[in-house]
Image (cartoon, rainbow, N blue to C red; front, side, top):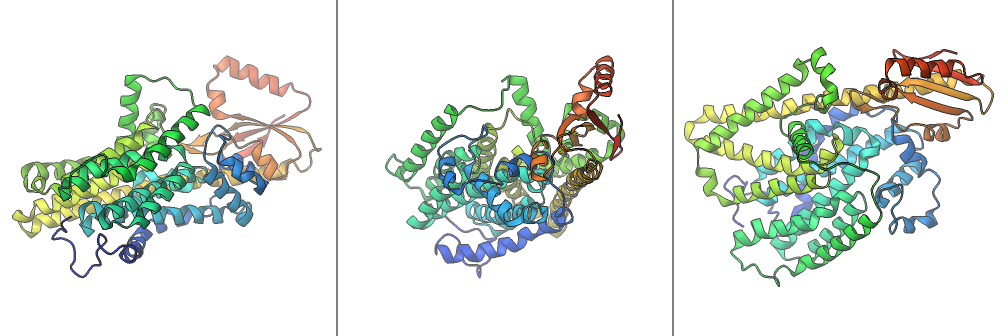
Length: 508
């Protein structure tokens, strides 16, 4: 594949010398990925929230002899044995110290950011696309949940191994080294054992062959030439059949309007920097209280996208360079393929793997936009550069904002559990304790959803703790809510605490 003019002559080639240049680039892009660290460091001490407790509790006392069985069975409704093993190891290392868990998440995230940059350069032979992909991925606004919520670490693992699998396959095609094909296969195995959504990787390898490798090299595409994909396809088919036989804990209705709305949700938070907590129908009160918070980033992102689009439409030169357009097509296919398995679900974390494709596509478009204004002079390049910096800054701001919400959720969890610990110490063992109106989430940063009884187990509570979340109360009519509270009040053996303004207040 021809190297673009933008590639520095002194830079080691990723495509022709195998492992050593790859490690050199990995170090360079890892340095760029450190842009994410200052964003997440303020929340590194954030306490466990929501499903963190159940995920840790079920792996806190595992029998290591049983671990091999995890890889051939569906457990807890999911098939994620490598993630569960990762959690068990974290428990052994860190116990209930959240800092260690968050450090592991940040490490996985920076490695993935670097890998996305390497993949971007490989697809375009342009180090500018690679560098921009790493920085943009590191600060993308919708990445707070998968990084700061430990329960979503499976997204980081699936994303990392999927990106490594694709990158290794690209290197195999460009170098002919079987080492990279083996590395791609290992990446696929690690990906599907981290989270099921990594199962689409063989499709992306085929997409690379069709859209890029054989199109650029002018080699004849045949069944024989695609033979390296056979193990991937067979493994993928076996895995899909195995996974379908295990069932799913989700039960959702498939409708065209739902698919369209969910796709719009993902594009809004991934491309147009809409904070995810403003992208739900139930978030209308948030819009009324602080409408400028989402309006400013969306307006900036939309304006920048429109400007880049106008430049590319005005200049047809970039289309003549098939390398960029083919790489852009690959990135779009990656985005759609990654969304296919999660399109019926709406959450910030499930956008994570598809955001790899989004970032690659945006980086290619930005570089093409910068190339397109060469004829206008230096001032035009400066305008495009400022626009790119603004887009990165907009996403970083949204990421900081969403990070603060998750930090607040962790702080609330720690405060309530410390108060509970101090207030129930005088109660007899096995006493019935009701915690009412605990927040399910704070602006869609989860707090006490699925916290108990796992938290009781890990914190060694001897009491029978029952929880009524605020979302459960709001689902009741005013009359039913009053009747429910009256029943609790009349319960002779129950001690009731009401959550209000961040505090647990003893009631009856």
